[in-house]
Image (cartoon, rainbow, N blue to C red; front, side, top):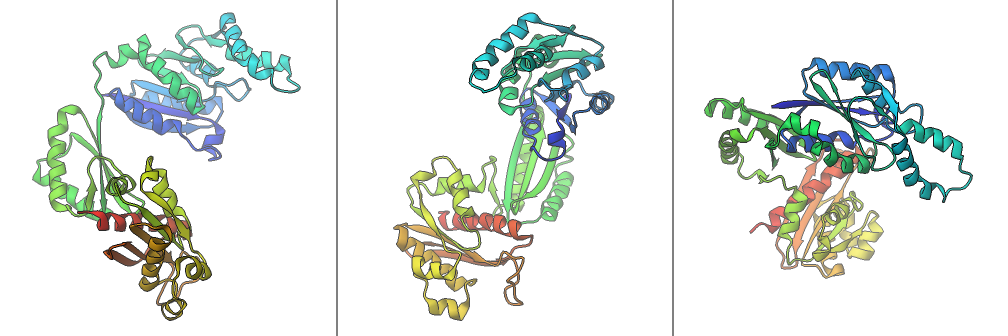
Length: 421
């Protein structure tokens, strides 16, 4: 299996001012052409650091290196000359490319005020410097990409803006050097995602240990597990020839965790609930989550077919005024209680004319907790207009943001339980 390394350049990415969107995207698209990503590196806009990353990846016996960023017109954009140096070639000026970049940029520059045309020409001339040995990838914006070789390692140089990188990617994949490396019959590395709710990472770790013994080894599968949004995610990558091993592992996990396994095709709980809501009319009543639950529901394309809306009843006055929660209920049980959660769900059903509703009310912290209701206590109720309901009170660990985010996951799983036939 071919191995690759990705180098994302940019001090703004290294320092966290800009989130890296290119590394994960490239990793997924390399998987689709049968290339396994062994390393994902981020380095600042410094020649020495980029050279060090290129050397490191070469020493790791990768077959392919893909870089993103550092192809702009400013002095800190130094990826192309640095990669050319590493590949043992020089840069030469391409007048035709310079004219093409200017033609692309001129209509935009004509709309700007006080354009320094000389500075613009200098920047464009820098971007028109291309490697003397290698293949040029035509620019999508103003920056061309390139493909070069350093010994036995192929290096693909791509721009940093995600929309430019993604559009240039297919050109790079279809280029002769890339095709020669991966072959014309390259098959994707298969990847499966299982999602489980209601178990812990140690639970799935124990299951995998038992499966390894029961199935005679899992060496042909690359398995990673993580806890994400209060769910256990099991991602498995494998060569197509190992699909039968994966299938046996899947059956083993399903037999051991059948109730907890809610998605075997990568679907999120958001998507699972969306499918179950077909033909329904949903409303939400939120206190501690303050709109986060409604936002997650609306994030799924097509949600307008079943999602009516909701009431953010953060204050008790809103619970009373908009959701018709009995003030005596609040006084006797408190806002964070199963009784109030159910009353909020009832209020949302009536106020929005829904046939199913879900509510959240809790103590997100950092203050406001008590011995009976510590920080993280959240009460939920999912209820239908016919009176069917599921309710839950839990203490969710984490800081304020984590508690509120995780509460949305719990609410969606409560909805899923209510909606399952």
